[in-house]
Image (spheres, helix red, strand yellow):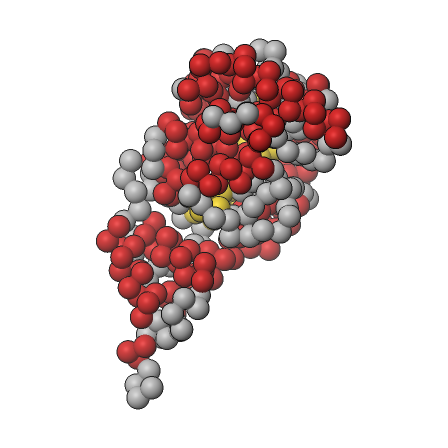
Amino acid sequence: MKGPDAEVRRAAAARLAALATPPGALGRLGDLAVWWAACQGVVPPRPPAQVRLAIFAGDHGVAAHGVSAFPAEITRAMVSTFEAGRAGVNALADAHGVHVRVVDVGVDDETSGPWKVRRGSGAIHLEDALTRDETARAFEVGARVAHEEIAAGAELLLSGDMGIGNTTPAAALVAAGLGLPAEEVVGRGTGVDDAGLARKTAVVDTALRRAGERAADPVETLTALGSADLAASTAYLLTAARSGVPVLLDGLMAVACALTADRIEPGVADWCAAGHRSTEPAQSLALDKLGLVPLLDLGLRLGEGSGAVAAVPLVRSAAALLADVALLTELGGA
């Protein structure tokens, strides 16, 4: 996979060093500016005007097995709230000029939209999440959504999630991708108590043992341990990277999908920046593997793409600094 422009990266780093600021004074914003310039292929870079978020929604069979603090019915209710523009991520998106799109890939209800692969995904400790055909269809959905968002002018893509129980398959994807046991990756999700955490860990442990050697293949991992929405999100991120469009990642689900996409085609991570650090251990472990350091660490665990949206102003700020701060050579007699 072709990565961000290395020559532009060097030129951006040189410009950063030549700014009328003390060396290293811009900290992580300087690093972000260099990455953004390399992704755009131009120095100085333009702040992203067209930022577009796709929220991939789906239900998960594990939600019926005590792994979540909320019932599965909340998924459909929240999808309706997104569509009405009244969820937390909508408020952030409105504040920062981010376009929001909701993609129902696997919500367990009677609706049958153009993106629906199935009603809910299998309980991964008992059965595969998807059939191979359903995984392929979910990949088609994610790729088509990415192409449509790029055609609409997206300069920066964000991936969000909605699905009660989704931190369980996401943790399983990370465990499979990193070769780690369940107890190292499982977190409390939406806030399960100690008994719920124990059940969730047991579910992931059983799922990993059931998948066995299939976990060595990233697409088989999605079929056995993922879900329709997570498979679609993986394809969305993979397609963005193949198209040379940078991505700002959200929490565990987005990062688990980015890890899986990078397993499918190494180099995806080069097109990604991490919006924030979630409270889930699997997210931090996957970010370390991908070589990404989160821009924000606010204790967020809302999901929806909210952490990525909250970090969008930092990308714009970084681009503005690299473009608009005077160079040392422009200071005259100073």
